[in-house]
Length: 300
Image (cartoon, rainbow, N blue to C red; front, side):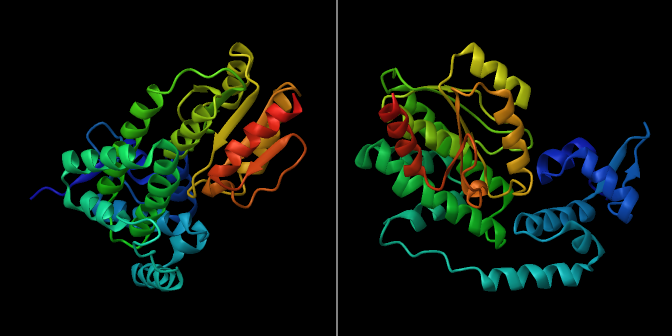
């Protein structure tokens, strides 16, 4: 039987490590060790891709790649097991009843029933509470289950797609707002857009005019878009997977390219450690987005 091999583009997409990172690791650490196909292009055996997934999972928890790449398979598994034991247990349904049932639906692979269940929950709760009491805590549960190896990558992707579809439909039904005009996006290397949709939903409900660029917009294009759309604020979402050390300098760089009149808001799990600085407003929670909007209106 022929061994499955993955192209470098497939590894970048499925594992979440850029091509440049893979090449640097290959030169510096001797891993991964790709083979070459008939055209001389890099291809990665399945067992190496699995090891890269494990390394990426531990990196997302704050471990340094240099130590991980030098570790044996047994040491990596032991580190992951220790991390699982040290993390708090997933909250039981109660305060937000039905979250575990929704997580079970994701794992049941019945996308149609899962989508309908989300829509029904949205109809019962209303969009604001649906975001705060269902999608936000359920996203945390899904992320925790993935980190603990109880959820496969494709299952996490299914949840993200269904939740995003539900939120987009709900946002489209909200009457167009007026002010402030908020430009929403993520920085390069931040492909996670669910947090962005949650913020957009809450701001739209408060009467803001939201312009979403989707994910991974280059800094210079964010600045150009802010000018083109005459934005009053730029809101960026950072997932827990975004390298925390990269966020502050990138935000400072973006701040320098925006007019002083345009506010810069940064929120999400990856921005939890950010501190408010000159011209940058750190949003510690989803509710803080609505508070930032009200503050903006109060100043004007």
